[in-house]
Length: 77
Image (cartoon, rainbow, N blue to C red; front, side, top):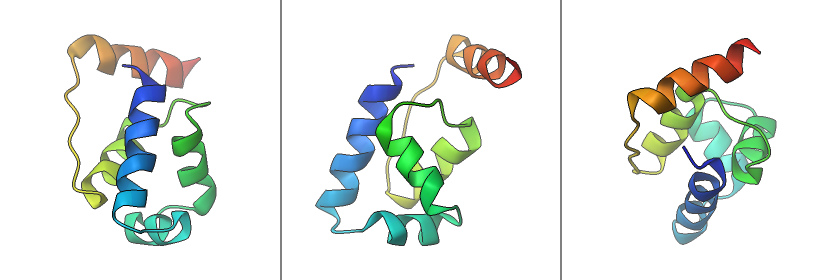
C-alpha cells in the first residue's frame, strides 16, 4: 500500500469538498492530530482510521491480503 499516494488523494478530496482538517476530524470522530498524521503520509495509519477517514470523504480503497498483513506487522513493531 502506497501511503503517500493515499494521503495525497485524501488531501485532494478533502479540499475538493471544502472541508477543513478540523471538520474532517470531527466528522470522523478522531483527533485533529490523527488527520494531520494521515495527510502527511509520514506515519502508517491504522487500517480502522484509514477506512473511517475514507468513508467520511466518500472514498474507497482496495486492499490486498498483503497490505493487511503488512499493516499488522507494522503495528506490532
